[in-house]
Amino acid sequence: MATMVMEKLVCVLINLQQIKEVPRMLTLAAPSMPGTVRDSDVPHYFRERYVCSGYRPLNQGWRYYFLSLFQCHNETINVWTHLLAFFIFLVKLGQLTETVDFIGDHHSWPLLVVILSSLIYSALSATAHLLGGKSELCHYTFFFLDYIGVAQYQYGSALGHFYYVVDENLHRHVQGFFIPFATVLSCLSCLGCCSGKYCNHSLPTCAHKLGQVIPSALAYLWDSSPVTKRLSLWSTDSNDPVMIYHFGQVALFLCCAFFFSFPLQERYFPGRFDFIGQSHQVFHVFLSCCTLCQIHATHLDFVGRRTLYTNLHKSDEAVLFVRLYVVTLVVCTLIAFFILSKVNKRLDLKNKSK
Ligand SMILES: *[C@@H]1O[C@H](CO)[C@@H](O)[C@H](O)[C@H]1NC(C)=O
Image (cartoon, helix red, strand yellow):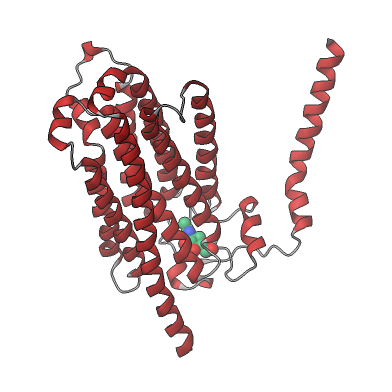
């Protein structure tokens, strides 16, 4: 027994030794990894306000940007936060498949859409932050993909809330149009975000931020209205354990909105948070926690409110909602590619005039 434990321990120690070797191995694998540069060394459209250093140089090979996952630069934490979130959601999905029959039980599909859409947004966001610094075209392409991710996640949330969280009274009022309207709002927020980024140069910062924030805020208000309604009816003696998670997801989302809109710490201490502490990183952390809370709450409702939601929704309704999810995804992608083609034309013109 003791020898076995010793052997295990030695193995673990050897593995730890190897982890310490990783940075050195990386430098060996990529001897020519260029260092980061200052904001004044990159074109102005790449500069992030109040972030002064840690910018990766442009126009390097793909390998450089992939390997920069292990380098310290202004996007490292943004990538890792959502990469970590992605793996946590994946583990959560794995755990749920042990108890939930995602194939046979149509009523579980909205739950699956919630988790899939969370996986997609976190993966696309991590990719955008990792690869978006390669060139201007990459910047737009990957951030537009990120916006598609956010839009389809909004739809996923709306679906989860409408399916499991809604009460009979609200359901009666919004029945025929809640989900189609969620599709419309998702597409609008994708449009707002993409065109906001496209007009980045021509409009002042607050104008393009508003174009991004207002449609998304509307979508959030609509998509979470079943949660808001349920929270408003919450009395402490109902003693429902899921309510704390619903409360948590709303509170965490409000924190997200705050840090997304107000980069307070870097405004007051420009340059101090170039690597770690930027408000966008705080936003990522809150958003991941919010999603985790939401997935947990959705699962608890999926288990606990079965009689209610199987009464409200026929089982073929879930099939329809999943189809509408695909429609949302496709339309958002078309919108993003339409605006990307305009970006492309503008870049061509710019290159020709050089
Ligand atoms: C980080 O630098 C890249 C260029 O490598 C730039 O595109 C991006 O906007 C910067 N992001 C932040 C958060 O500073």
